[in-house]
Length: 347
Image 1 (cartoon, rainbow, N blue to C red):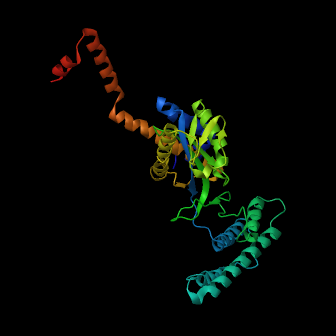
Image 2 (image 1 turned 135 degrees about the vertical axis):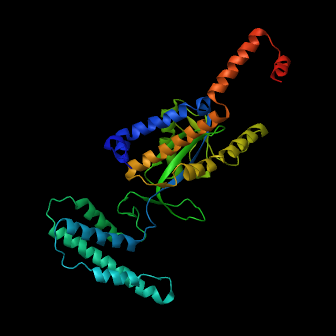
């Protein structure tokens, strides 16, 4: 996409920067008025997935081979062997690996492709000059080739190496590959007052402090209560905000018990809010590159939803209509008309 005066959209986003995106998000909260300044809020985390395919080791090894060939072509390096025909046969051997007769053949093809990728990477390291622009890429390739099945901090994508594997306990989607996001909404009105990307796969309770710090920075006030689910166990107060978690509390009266119950029922409203963020406002798959793209995508999605909320509100009660009705009310009060007389005049 090209913007005016030859400025690309990616360059435009970089000029705005994260601070500018946060300012846009803050403005979307401000126009919601009193709805964005409630004392109670709800918080939950979700995953914004990166624009990558489901990662497998054989996919990464095949991409390493293709990238090494591209580097050799750009630098005019003559490779000892390109393995083009060999790779084509091995890819055919990898098909239908779930058939009982193809297990062994597919495993051997996986191992051979990994061996070829290692050979090409080492050959490039020998033939490229000591000072070259491909050192970070070759280091990344070596890390991918050396990682094991159960290693931590694995690489799941060559073009998005910071991608995390996150398990949220969903039955239909066991693992999601992207970054964790913390969303804070007001309890009653549902205005999004906090949307923060968490680069690492942190425990939910550990995401509260940076998320509430962003909320206080944007709204300028400290929340009284923050209703969360049981995934946030182990923490009671963060930055002056009480963290309320469902638990069997004793020695409380029926009024307090009912108040907590109503709060947790309202907490469930954040789940469809996150669903609309994903389905309607592009939080389901992030196409922006890098951690910078993760950070701005969540704030832009939240800002769009807040702006959309006010647009829908203005459709029902247009500002001009509200202003005219206010003038009409002042006029009726000034001439002393009673409500019954106004009703007769309307008909």
